[in-house]
Length: 114
Image (cartoon, rainbow, N blue to C red; front, side, top):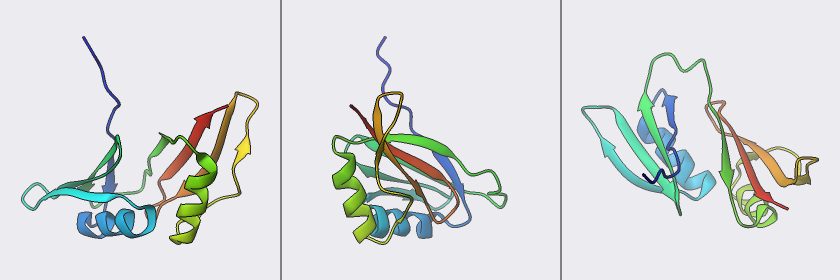
C-alpha cells in the first residue's frame, strides 16, 4: 500500500472567492469547481486544497505546507499581499518556517527541514 499526502478540506463561506484568494494571493491554480456540491479545489505543485461551502466556518484549519525554499516562498507570498507573519525562523526542532493566515482564519505553516 502506498499513501500520498493528505488533502485538507477547508470550510469557507464562498468557494469561488476562496479559490480567487488562493490564486491571487498565494499563487495557486484553480483546479476545479462543482456547483451542485458547492466544493472546489486549488493546487500548487504537489499541494492540493479542497474548499467546501459551509455556513459555520468558526473552526479554522491548521496545516503544514512543505516548500523547498522557505525564504523564497515568504518573499513571493509577501509580494502578493498575503498575511504572512514574521520572517522565517529556524526552530529548535530542525525546521525553517513562517506562518501565514488566510482570509478565513486558517493557519498555514510553510516549512522545510534544515
